[in-house]
Length: 142
Image: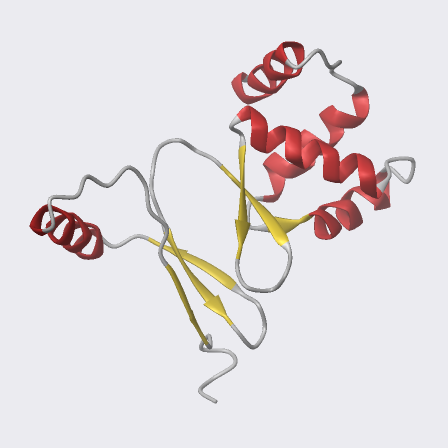
């Protein structure tokens, strides 16, 4: 319920109303997990709510990003994808260039190495993204 209130509060600060359509989109997004494009979320929602249009889903995803509930990501497939912001754990991504699968992973050794490299250069990391592109086990080597 806290995330729903965060979204409602954000809408108020933007002078926007909390509508039933936005609530449906928020619920679908929070239940989906993963890294969804506007089209993917729209197709999921359309089955049960055919009155919700593509543009409404697109605008609502942008509002979710503005509210801090979602983060827009670009994984080289020319689509903006959205993933939930948990605010807790950092993770990195493995992206399959053949099928488009996106796998999340965490690795303490990589995080420590990045910190060490930054310190060696007198650099303070504020944030970072690590995306590794290749082929997943299902697709196999080229």
